[in-house]
Length: 544
Ligand code: FAD
Image (cartoon, rainbow, N blue to C red; front, side, top):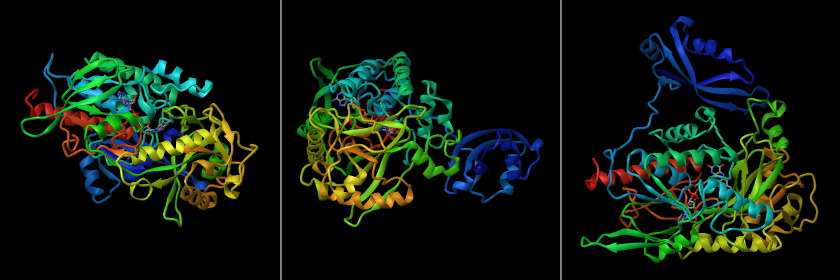
């Protein structure tokens, strides 16, 4: 099978336009083509008056060798790669050796657990939160009644931070082994729409994610895996062996006692601040890392559609428009859009009492009135929170607490209109844009809860972004804050064997450990770490 990439057809082309386009591209007649299937579909909207659909297509031909010879040197025609997943090891039937433990049932822990289960290693997956249905009720408790459950919320519980999200499933990671394809394939088996296998920018939305994590749980359990909910790991047993190597030997689960464990995947997410503290106290190597701070920005989706697609806005093959923009400000900071959610809502994403954090989510249809996106500024340990591996956590807490106060102390988010933000005055009344954040937005001056350098850089960027996306800096556009959890404030550094630099048996993984930034990359990291655990089992002679 051969793969043609960069095959372009005009927006709105009929489905039967594909075959003649393939034949024309390859200079073949219909009898030479056995079959074809779309492998990837994107759009190119750089020229709004002539938007094109851009395809990769897998073709089966009568004489592929001859075509390959004829197109030698053509980078857009090659043998279709093997994107199948191949296990690195398998436990024997009925394996009853030591079970690996996975901490965290977010995308990283879920895929680490799934791969370990598929290899026959019967993992135990512990999570501090609840099963997704119960967790949903708790999460809505904050959004509807301003009641936060610190153990069951947008950050903690089945499905992890990605459950109440836009469910964007793409990433910039290098993926030579096509592990992302394994993730998407498992998602489809668990109920995701098949189009995620071909769309260049696939997304699932919140409701579907809820069903999918339930189906994946059932699969993992059917393979001998076991979940333990409301099991918060509160401490780690670490012993120094006769060989002088520090090793994890067990976990302490709050209120549940001790769990022996010598192979521990730590897929904690970026909000498990108490666990970061325990790891630091136990001497596990941990370092501060850069992340970003800013706000959510909300525009009517129709403005974004118009700006990106012109007269084609609303076309069924385009869906709600997204954007990604950045600007290097004069004060040395980079301002950029983060986790853009077309047709979605801004959500309350704190996991700690007395703090306010924003993020964004959407449903599969992406048909809510507003587009939202993080509008954030980069920060790093050297400049902004020097001196201690956990100083980034203190930095986040400070601004999140100030946001809680600026919002009136009721979990409402502090908000400001762009016109007032640029003029440096508090907002008092909404204009053309109605914000979506629940439990509500309290108009004020965001300067109370953002660092000066961030405000300066954001003020500089707004008109520049407004030139790229007309309406971006409209005075009525609403900003809500603060957006502090763009990625983990720490890296729990690991070596080539994926184990902690100084604690054997501990496998830092996913976003919380600083090795992923999003659902897909966290899931891919979960696969890699599961493979590393399996290789260690082989090295220890536990399986072959
Ligand atoms: P998490 O998903 O954070 O999972 C960590 C899990 O560990 C949690 O379930 C937690 O309960 C558990 N845990 C933590 N500490 C302990 C402990 N001590 N003991 C036991 N269990 C513990 N990314 C995208 O790619 N696309 C999007 O559209 C998108 N939208 C988002 C929207 C929102 C509102 C949020 C909050 C995030 C969004 N993200 C999105 C980011 C994405 O969700 C994360 O990158 C991803 O979930 C990280 O996966 P993870 O498994 O590493 O960690």
